[in-house]
Length: 112
Length: 111
Image (tube, rainbow over all chains, first blue to last red; front, side, top):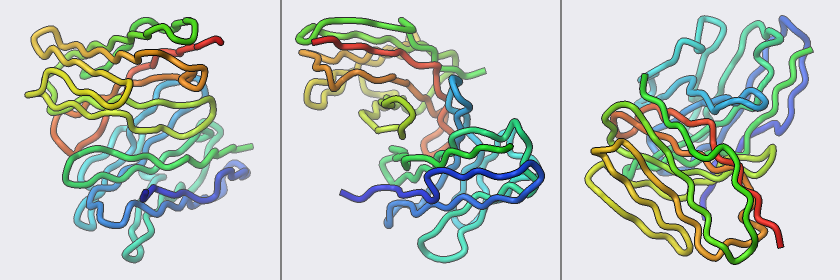
């Protein structure tokens, strides 16, 4: 069964460093999303991407964040200058015509 | 703001019993989706129910939706120890847009 994959599974970085989180969505899906979950808290929406552009973003998704679909398969989230409060589990999701959103296993980002 | 809130926050049952979790939200929605999350792991999609549907089944799972009350329930029948996890509802105002998650119900099934 097709699934969303994410790399790396765990990323440790120093405050102020740039990180890129990678996702491979399900191949025939058209909608792509990033969410995050701070430890012990709700899953929060960051951004959605459709037709090669951002379709929706939350207040969390400020100028420090960017997304890209550099080729036909990958979908990336970049955080330019990480802060301590960016430490969280980051989930990529993809959705098809039936509007179900399937999530990847997540990347645990730890900012020191 | 649109928000899914699950009830109860925590539920402990014995294997073989049924588990019912409820979700309430505040605004009109296009669909509501239920997810399972094992500790520290990813979100597993369980069921999507659309606003024009009242009930859906998938194996031992039964989901209902009452749009007049802005609430949904997830019933797991004949629970197993492997069902131990957190369960979240998530709503979308428009199909394909951001999902808004609740805080989840932590289900513990003991054998």
